[in-house]
Image 1 (cartoon, rainbow, N blue to C red):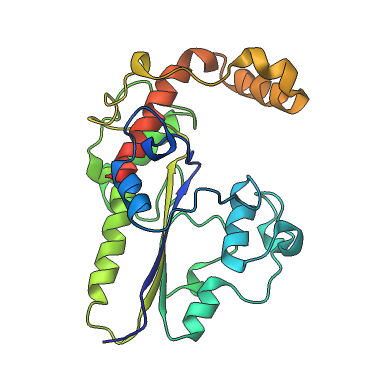
Image 2 (image 1 turned 90 degrees about the vertical axis):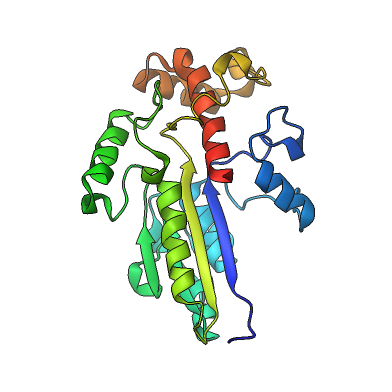
Length: 260
């Protein structure tokens, strides 16, 4: 057996740090994560290099700012500039590497020893079972916004369950291996579309949610970029404001689902 430590990076997508009890939020959305944070090292003053998905992920992989990687948007990943990244470094140290879940970087399946790719609306094994395929079709009906009713599929079909199951299988296969492993476990959730099955759908009812810290009345003060963003949502989804409480409730349900 190897004496080198195995390394797992667990990443979620679009998860707010302030919606957990450890940060003072009144609802118990992430009990396991809160326990993990208070029993280990809790970097509660850590900041992202950029509040955009692909550039932030590339920075995490390479240790470089977006100004150095040249990836400043979600749409110019081919411009990624770096010398070495985490996968290459671990591989050169004799590690087996795996990416299980959402990628959204310049990485390809050839860059890892094990690869299971999942997006926001689909996974690479969707066509392996009729239930997976039907779930994929259901996700498309959300129009990448939110589902107003409980998701009519069991937990086992949801991406987090499938991602964890794939990762567990790979880790167990390596139990007797000589080489250590590096695993990037990457969840597309709680990014939209905001949808959850029961019991998570009913766990945080819209009428029980604490008020938001601000509302649309602050847009004029915040400026054009915020006004433009709100207008874009309302143009795409005229009932955006009406659906917001349900979307918030689903988001909190997704937090608990991920925590579980």
